[in-house]
Image 1: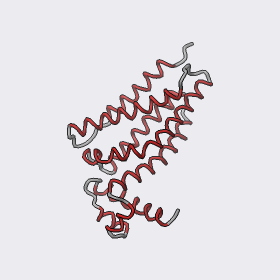
Image 2: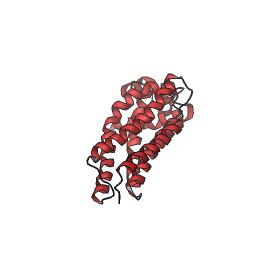
Image 3: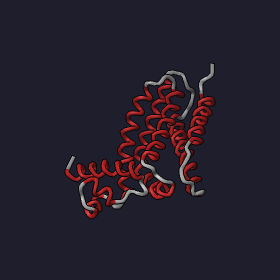
Image 4: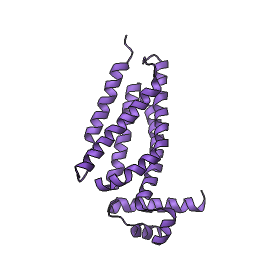
Length: 202
């Protein structure tokens, strides 16, 4: 890790502490600069704004969480349980990150476009993981399907779409906070619906 990366890591840690204490919306770059021991002008060398700091750290920590989650998922028995556990856990983690950092609906509206840009690479890795689970289940004759890769893509895309729909409704209605409970229920139903249709009979 070079010096610039070390400084960015320090900034990220300090920023997340500020976000947890004050919330993303109320935290200022002055707060972050003071916490990390730099002046505000120096922060602009590394980041354009506080939202960029939040997104970069959230993506990095999210990648670490996903790697750990995938290992935990492999310990579950049955491909339906594995995929259900995986999709539900990732939504719960996402919700906890937003709640812990007190990300308002207004702030979320600002960061979502940039977040999606950076999330693309992680989504490819997630789809590959689910594809491997499905391929293994087919090899063990637990499933009968022709296109596990497309099924994995549908699962991830629909899970993301359910979450995104909840967020967009909250943004349009100018709600104070977002309730992801329905997204979680819909995700569980999605997994159940798909596997009831593709589980091998007999």
